[in-house]
Amino acid sequence: MQYYTGFTLVDVTDTGVTRSRPGKEKERNQQRNWETLIQVLSLRTQPQEIDGPYTNMYELQGESIFGEMFKGTHTVWHFSFGVEAVNVFKDSRSDYGLLYEDFAQVPIIQGLDETARFMLPVFYPYGAIKNIHFINQRISL
Image 1 (cartoon, one colour):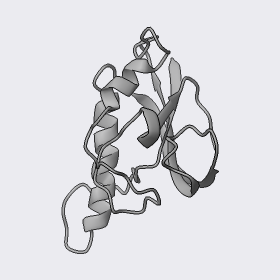
Image 2: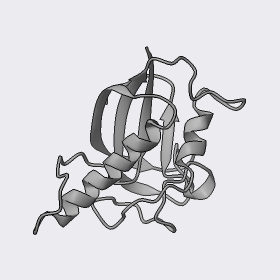
Image 3: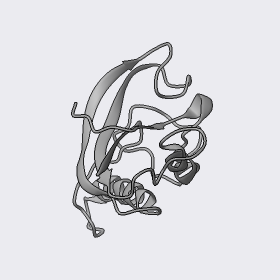
Image 4: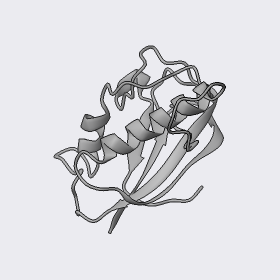
């Protein structure tokens, strides 16, 4: 099993609300973002042993794992998962380069509990507006 951990500024809270109900719109939209994330992970392989998502507040300054547009204290969602197919996300740049390609410009729902404000309502894994990051190991925070 090969493990990865993802970090995002997008609210991907797993609320378990899978149907629209009056008064649960925010929770449904948070769940929609989580479901979108899982679906993108599943494009190349079946993620297993999913741990999270969890949240922590981080002070983003200088060189961080996110784009330079995001400075100050922000909520970061993190999650880990395993895959059986070794190097399934590997490309010529990194062990998880294909994950970045898969997540580029995937739509999200914003205006939930995220503290970062996005120029575009999408996951974006590159440059100044980078809001999702992956590492090739399982960590618990």
